[in-house]
Image (cartoon, rainbow, N blue to C red; front, side, top):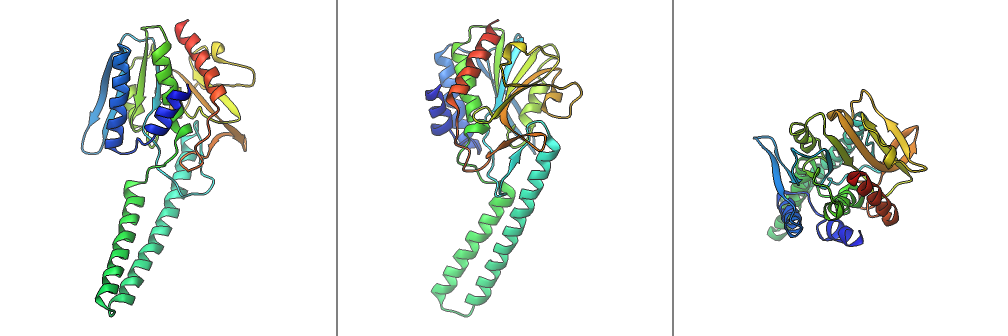
Amino acid sequence: MKDKMMLYGVTLARRFNNKQKEIFLNEVITNCNKLNKKTSFMTLHNKVNHVCNLVINDLKSAKTIVCASYDTASKVILPNYKYYPFNPKLNVKQESYNLILEVVISALLLVLAYMIVIKTINMTLWIKILGIVCCVIIVLYCFFALFKGRANVFNFNRNSAAIALIMHLVEHVDNDKVAYVLLDKSCNSYEGLKLLKENVSDHQTIILLDCIADGEKTVVAHNNVDVSALLKEGYIDKKFDDTDNTLGYFNKCIMICKGSIADHRFIVKNTRSKKDYRVDVDALNVLYEDLKAYLEA
């Protein structure tokens, strides 16, 4: 597992823009070809979205589909940012707070740029040029921060560990009724997940791996699926019947996530920041063994 974490968590850790995603997908496809595993793309192209999910094995004949997002998250500047895997409404609040903070900082920087222009307008040519360069840098920073976003450097928990685990399963699980889907635009949004929903049936079981690298508690959330084989002492067994979270996209779904409990809510800390570098390798290996046994049963 450590070699997979090095590859997908370090060497191919940047999967934010299209070029970085292309490099990642080419590497995964190359590795699958070596294992004689079939790969295909599940795509959506329109004026607003460009989504490219990678499917490993035959999706239509699969009884179980294991998936995780492969795009890496954008960086946030909000201190103590919290990710709520089972509460999208609280995630929207966190995003709103972060956006407000970025707008305020960008506004202050633009005011600074304006002041630089005013102060240097009557000075020597070289000082004017220096002032213009500073203003251009400030404007570009504000544009990319607000509209393009900035890639987070460390992404072990969200979601390189899940990608490493899936690729380890691809290599070692002996069951042609299992397919794997690496989801595009499902870390910063739900576009890849929505595309998957359109291509699976209600009788197929979806296993979604999300933030499995580090955390005090492990939650096995599910709807319409028996998860007793995946539960261990200390795990949280969370059943959802009617849900407005990720599990609600599918008729039969399991979602596994590690995190902690705060204010009676399940949260994941340190994602989308430079602190997302911790990996509990022993726990990751245990989860791999449990999933392997579950998929081969």
